[in-house]
Structures are given as C-alpha cells and as structure tokens.
Image 1 (cartoon, rainbow, N blue to C red):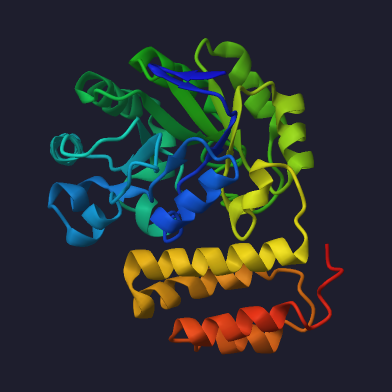
Image 2 (tube, helix red, strand yellow; image 1 turned 60 degrees about the horizontal axis):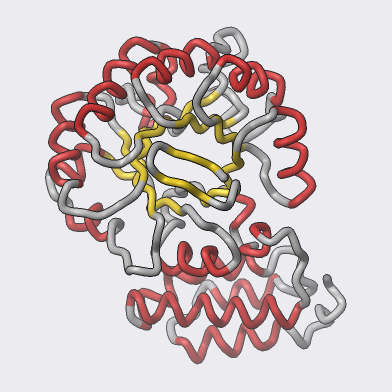
Length: 315
C-alpha cells in the first residue's frame, strides 16, 4: 500500500505525465493493465490561469479515469495562485509540481529543473501549493542541475519541510536530460533522509529494471514514463503475444477516434503506432504508410499487415 496524503494506492507503479502523450485514451488503456494512478500532461500555470482552451482540454476526464493526478509547471507565485483557482473547478486526486523538466524553453523561464538551483524558492512555492490545495501535494525533482551540483537530498528536505506528501525523483541531472546512467546511489541517499514516500523514475523499461530500482534504492514506488510507450504490459510485468499486441493497437486506435473524432484521432495515434511496433520485422514501409494515414480504414489495413510479415514469433 502506498499512501500519498489521504490517497491510498494498492499499486506501487504510477503512470507519469508525458507532454503530448498522456491524453485520456492513453491513460485509460494503461489503467486496464494495472496503472492505478495516472497523470494528465504537464500543465503550465500561466496557460491554465489564462484559461487556455488547449490547456483546459488536457484536463478532460471520465469517471473511469481515477485516481487522477495533475502536474503543474511554473515559478511565479501570482500565476500559480491563479492556476490553483482555475483548478478548483476540476476533480483530481494529486497535485504534483514539476521541478524536473530539463527542456531549454522551460528552464530559460526559471521553471522546471531551474528551480533545483534555488531550493528555498522552490520551498516557498510548495508551501503555497500545500496551503491552497485540497488534494495531496507532491513534487518532482532531479538529482541536481549537473554533476557538480548534485543537491537532491537538500532539495528533498526543503520540500518535505514545506509539507508535501511525497517526492518524485528522476535519477539524472538536468544536464543529462534523458541520457547517461541513472544514479541509483543518489536516490537511495534521498530515501534515507525522508519520512515521506519517495517515488523513483528513470530507465523504467521492463520488469527487471523496475525490480532493480526498488532493490537498489529502497524507494516506495516507481513512476513509469517512456517505458509505457507502446507497452502497457509493463504494469503487469509480462511480454505479450503478437495477437495481443495487434488487439491492443486496434483498441487504442478506436479509443483515439472515439475521443477526438476520426481525423484528429488517427493523426494523434500515428506516433503510438511507431512505439507499439518497435522491434517488428519489415516495419519501415508500414510506418511510412502510417505517417500518411487519414482514416480508420487506412490505419486498420496497416495494423493488420503487421501480423502477417513474419512477426508471429516475435515475442
């Protein structure tokens, strides 16, 4: 059992937010395979505060899409306060604050991983969130800005003192982005000084790596991000038969069409087709065709072709 404030979770595997990925069909599909807590895409405090239509559409959900987490990005308290006011209109179960995103356009604004440079400023923001949120508050951090400023332990303690209910940590520095090795040692050291749950992430691509993260860090839970792309089976720790992969690809396609309409749904699904077919034989021509597909019929024809091109024994 994982406890995040008032929220009690049976699963210790969490579906992390991913920009441009974590829409409603993606979340619901992964929930079927065991992702109990899932997050919407990261939301910019300024955008939601200005009631951006695109940003508000990210918060669309259903009764099956529970428990649900929202991750907020920002650094200016006035915009964060305004965002919190707007978010009161929505029902969600966890409010996470992003102090980990390494994207250049984000850190240039002093947001995301840039806040690792100033733990006190981050602490003040977290105090504001804790004070004004009815839902449990968490924060996502990295091990530090670069190899010369690995300060995750200090940042985590500042966050804990601010009153957050748990901490997410990606085991790389901002400078590493998503390359290089995950630093299990730093995660373990952070875990030792905390009295609240620590949820670890980084290179969570299969059951073996999930076990390694738990074993080497002692973390309380693991957040799955890129490892869930085209692979909802990661939450069950199993490898599917090719027939099961084809079935789920079609299910995901139809869910996208149902949610967004045929034209937009097919367009949004194209990238998922690439992830689902990783490792498939003779897949390049089919991927090229998928990139041009505009209708469900177009995409179904391509998907069905996957199972007859020597892939039956792939798994």
